[in-house]
Length: 397
Ligand code: GLY
Image (tube, rainbow, N blue to C red; front, side, top):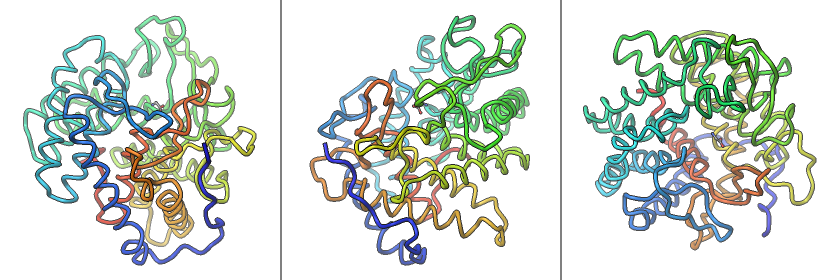
């Protein structure tokens, strides 16, 4: 399978944002909306995409996976952008069954409830003020709070309490699940959600973010007393390497934690992780799957990491002062990286491809790469809509 075409060199000056809006972002959004609309009759509101096969086609999957919220999230964004009722109806249909999903104990005992419910029932509340959806979202936050382990003062990502391999293990991805907890505190005036989120953000900052602003994917603590043990990877190249998507989750997650807490340490963490991400990009501004992997002709990219990082840096930019020393640097990154994604990784010239973005990588260690990933599609759409209309998704109201 051919890799992405080489894009312009990184030092090409970024075109003015307004020109990008009319020449690049708007046509890219139109194309993305067409692809999203074409998914509606295929998934019929009852199945969900996860990753594509090698011919760029998604399988029809149940809502069991951690990724089931991203397609409904794309439908909600598409509705808010276009006000087209067909997207609203499809979004409601795809979101409806998430109420039942929460009642399934096997599916609701996971840190991924943030991804799942932020982009479904929270989105429904934020987009159309559906109060039942709001109630379900609070219940999802209750279920997520049960993943908080007081003995070790952390949110356990995977596995049951006491699990031999995953007990006491935190992962950087959880940073994106914390907005559900912050939001629930604001809605209910119950500080418990927010306290757990802050503990998790502090632990992630102290142990997962390394002194050079790179990151471990995961970190183990003694599950009985919270003593720190060691960093380790799951989807990265090595235990002490920097998995590109994990770094991107950190950029966006810390910027969102800053939004909810105004703790400057989180803003600085987001800034420094973003600088690390940008400094380690190849010339076409789209990340390889791990920043420490040897780069050979067939080393996989993870386009989803770059789409997430673009959203994270746009969120970060929203919190930086107008005259911040890094502003121009970050704006150039977003322009260059998103232009590269649109021109060389999107499916704009590929009518047979089902998703929006090619060359994502779920888990290279399991030979899962050169594929659409539904979260890559979601964050690509969110980034474009942030750039064009300031639509920021559902991580906050
Ligand atoms: N949160 C799982 C992943 O990024 O693959």
